Length: 248
Ligand code: ZN
Image 1 (cartoon, rainbow, N blue to C red):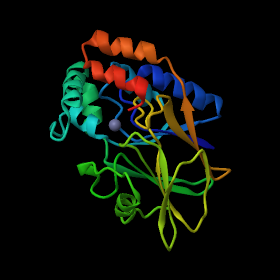
Image 2: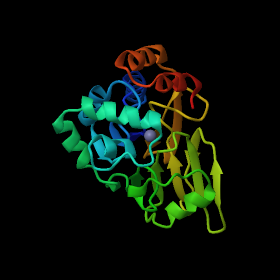
Image 3: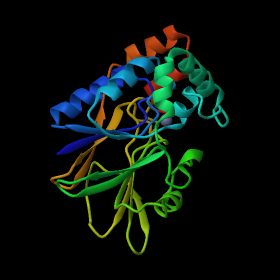
């Protein structure tokens, strides 16, 4: 069985469609979503509809989802993010906002065959509702203090990275394909589908192959020009469009 892990889609329909077509071609049959389905880009409604139609094992709330449904305030948002969040809120139906408001902050996923356990959270297991950023091994350790499963997937920073914890230390590393050491603990940031910020503008997502015990990071070019045009036409901040091209 192969699972696709989707983080920080951020209403980018072109990126999401590209990722899902690729995942299907890879033999993915199940999905998990790490939150921030909406915010920044121009297709919140369409992206929500697609995500809700997937065969989901789990989906958690992101900070942009929390603001878009009115569950949290705009506190901590920069002016661009705040403008986009307000625009998003006006463009979601009441039913969509209710669905977002009902999402958990974290979720444990248990699969029988083969025996697989992992946790999903948007930002950090260290107080998930306060959206702590995990940018280094120290912050990864804070999250892993609350990680009971051998594996946890996160998003939020929009930059893919794997933290591997042994008895001695926690090491951060880039990864293309990651094979598990059963004695270690893993915290994996899956990057962002709809707004990568690691200076690589290609959409990012992860597949988890349960039979092989491997995790693979995928980077895919998508129709960025269309996504940018829609952002401008919608009246969203121009910066939301330009940053897509620079991957920041
Ligand atoms: Zn995000």
